[in-house]
Image (cartoon, rainbow, N blue to C red):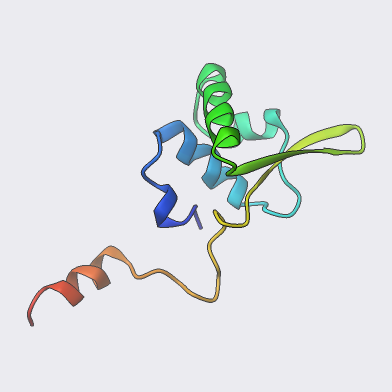
Length: 96
């Protein structure tokens, strides 16, 4: 499961970070965990985190001795309302 479709128009590194965070929306991830999950360089990760923070798509919280990054609720897709696949959307648009 990845970030909602509305957020997929961001840079590749931002989408990679959001997708990684979606895997653990409640627990969040540290920067090191994000670095291992998102296939981006450390510079790209830093830039992506800055942009996502400015857009209020992530929050940063102290969790004991750890600092974790969490996705905003608006980014996390609702598991009950599954978005249609590309094939389903094409099928709806083409006259059959």
